[in-house]
Length: 58
Image (cartoon, rainbow, N blue to C red; front, side):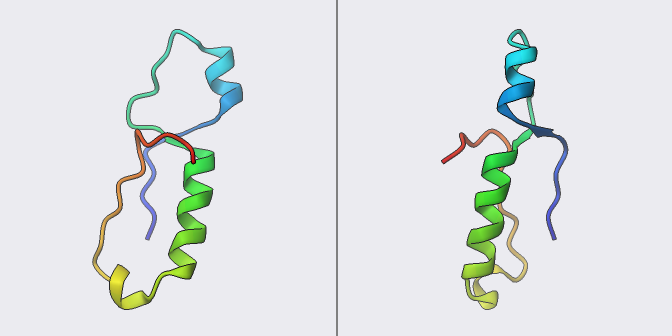
């Protein structure tokens, strides 16, 4: 299960440079996290909650 409060991307940041977007997840980080989830063994992920908000894109 993925829980996302809000999404943000570079275009939104450029259009709103005064905003910090607290709690928002960068779309690039979300995409990378989904790829990591599909590569990880299920028994390592069951019941886990991974924090993405506030993480810089990789």
